[in-house]
Length: 148
Image 1 (cartoon, one colour):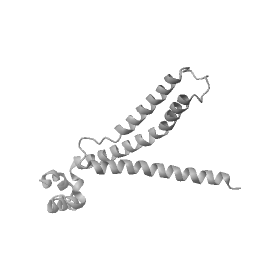
Image 2 (tube, rainbow, N blue to C red):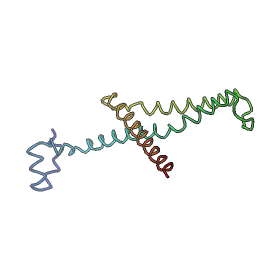
Image 3 (tube, rainbow, N blue to C red):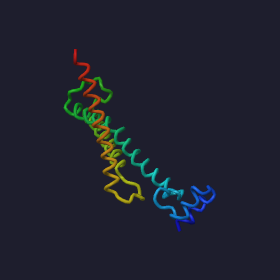
Image 4 (cartoon, rainbow, N blue to C red):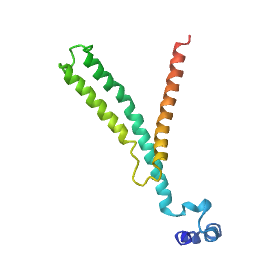
């Protein structure tokens, strides 16, 4: 079956044709099926996209949570456009909930995912790797600024 899908290798001459017909396209020529490469790239793209969404939304969690907490305590000045403490707290909570839901939606794997646990491990692992690299860069930058 794979030999029929790799029939076009015959036109490459001795190099591609004889190898594809002898081996029926396993091993190094397993991507001779046009859809296999596209499916692989699509899966990797979706993992990177979901990881990027988590990294993108992370900075929004703290301001929304801080706004809700500060306004609920009454620590903020009354110069805020929302004069009511309850309305300001609900606005912060709504922003926080929306952001957390968006981050949770990035963790939902696509339908064609074979292993949900592997997908989650790649997305969360990539996210944590970005956070660790960012923390190290921040630490190195602040350490340089404080040295004489």
